[in-house]
Amino acid sequence: MVIKFDGLTEVTPHIEPHLLDVLETVSDPEIPVLSVLDLGVIREAVEVDGVVHIKLTPTYSGCPAMDVMSDDLKTAFEKAGKKAIVKLVLAPAWSSDWISEAGKKKMEAYGIAAPLDATADKEALLGEAKVVACTNCGSKNTRLVSQFGSTACKALFQCNDCQEPFDYFKCLT
Amino acid sequence: MKQDTLYQYILGIADNSLILGQRLGELCGHGPTLETDIAITNISLDLIGQTRSYYQYAAGLCDDGRTEDDIAFLRKEREYRNVLLVEQPNTHFGYVMVRQFFFDVFHLLFLKELQQSSDETLVAIANKAVKEVTYHQRFSSDWVKRLGDGTKESHEKIQEAVDDLWRYTEGLFYVTEVESAAVKDGIGVAVSSLKDAYYEHIKSVLTEATLSVPEHSFFQKGGKDGIHTEHMGYLLSDLQYMQRTFPNMNW
Ligand SMILES: [Zn+2]
Image (cartoon, rainbow over all chains, first blue to last red; front, side, top):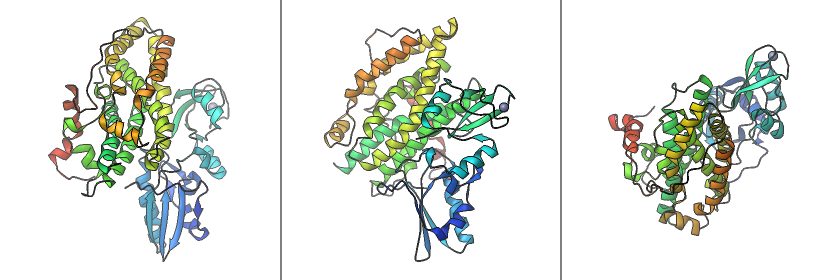
């Protein structure tokens, strides 16, 4: 997939309402409970002459899920009888603030602690403050095991109370 | 600015990330603990992801159908513009972390300047990369401190790595003709202006890590001009193996 840069797109994505249903069916292959809409990676989706044009932004530069998401989007629209063209755009750079509130709840229920605000995140990842709550028992008596977790977007934590190891979705703003 | 100069300038930035990404990738499955193994490969992935953005941009400037893969895999050793620091081997974990730390501090300073470039694609790549590299620097700085202020053995080993790799730091600030031209056009970063902030930061972390700052002023030159250390050839033979054995292969 080729990354094309085409100027600064607005931070608020431009998505035509009638395309939402299909977009909602495409999920992040690494966190399947999150749709591409929850994740905030769809920056634009418009239909022109029967062809759907989608602009997708990567969470991390090397995120291998992007190629998969791009293919999944094309397949999903094909099933709905439409051709989709997906472009990867780099600007503006994705921010974890773009994950929807619903997305954060789904993430927590899935066992991944959702990103905190920037200040709390920094304290958490430097081990200065206990602010990340255990996804199993809710205790904030947790510790950072590694700033880098199972995928580029996550850090690894462990609960000191119930011993559960869990992922924390890093703040990237 | 001439397209070719811009092309060369982009490669000069990207090659550092490619080669360091490759070095870190060699450690996949060989990290000292599972967590560090995962961390190192995550950093490798970020760097290679950044490299792809740069190379795709560079390939698009050429009219000959060149792709990112051609740029990554089909150049000769002397055509790679990376600094000598990033091609140094993974001697032991202390080396890996010091090499990373020496590069990360530069990389972050560099990207923050590149965010001010007049080239909007480079700005977009830098805006993305700066967030990732902030994590890299945090990781490598932590390890330099832990190993330096750790056991007698870890202290000795990491001091040895600091002393050995120090000679490659100055090469980060060497200015090529292509860079001068890019700076003049408002596109490039004047790396020499980053030097004071760089050494100041490095020294403060080394001091905190109870490590001594090397005093020798012998610095090895090369890298950015295409003259590499003996390690580069071995690295490239690994990196380019598939494309050389099965030309034009695709995943
Ligand atoms: Zn718990």
